[in-house]
Image 1 (tube, rainbow, N blue to C red):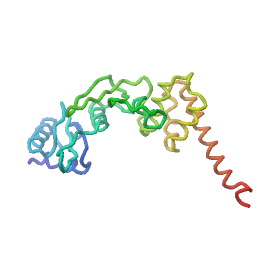
Image 2: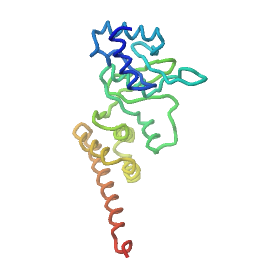
Image 3: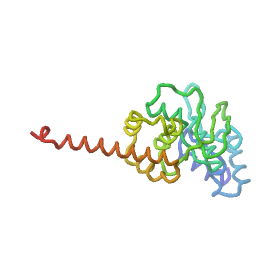
Image 4: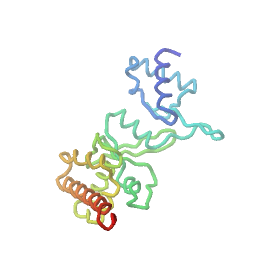
Length: 218
């Protein structure tokens, strides 16, 4: 194997089994043509797997089933990295992941700052849909999921129950990211973030107050 291939495999192994990647992630090792050639040779040698146009993975292995199908989120992340777009859970996926809905989307879908498209990788279909809501580059999947859920609900359906349920699923880092992202949100959504923050602070204050109350100390 070439020096470029050796460097690629070192990075791939460091990421671990299940990682999905594109040639763009190795451009620091040489020219694009040398990276493409090295990836092609590694795939031919079965050290990595080509799963789609410009997409490869270091597949998870099963004792009986062999190489497993790539994870949908890994595919979506690789496609987004390839185009330089930001990625977030779709509103439906976020609602399910946050425990706000019992319905699990039948097909993997994600919100993206890029164009709407469907990518097929290793027989798996992944939908990336352009998001009308902002996707915060400095935020966690949870925080970005909340943004997508809010956009799906709309300003008139974010009631007190929604504030209680959403704030309960955010930690301090999530809230800090949402507060930082307010300038790029619609005004009403930024106001909702302030309500989420106020509710969480109030809830934390109530818990702390309860721990230090005379009844608990007596």
